[in-house]
Length: 138
Image 1 (spheres, helix red, strand yellow):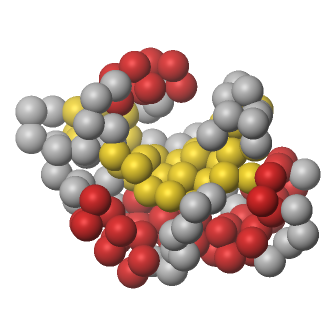
Image 2 (cartoon, rainbow, N blue to C red):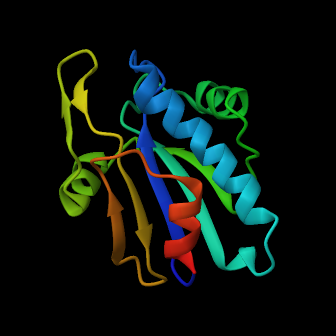
Image 3 (cartoon, rainbow, N blue to C red):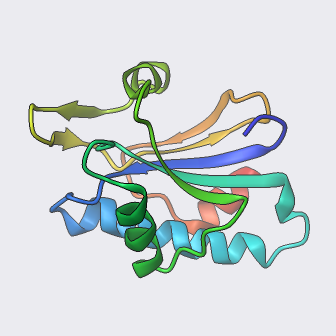
């Protein structure tokens, strides 16, 4: 992800709140579609990273994203961190709490990162919109 701007959001497939993870990934799909229709979109990567790497297998992640309209490709990927998620959570100051079995609380967060992986914008309180993200990416 170094060298180009990036949009990164977080979720997990067992989330029971339809206004958080499922809605977030559906909006990500809309963003990918809108972004890829624009000239110069190769200068932006997008990703969704699961909070629940033990449960969210690659097959489960791909199906979850595709069912919500995300067209995955070389610049638009879904990830799980089998190691290092705690470091990523600290680095981005993510609002997530994990119990022994699953996630116990989380915010619907997303970030725009610079080509040097610095946080340019953090969406945390209100759900982000496609137009808002596109505006920040410009």
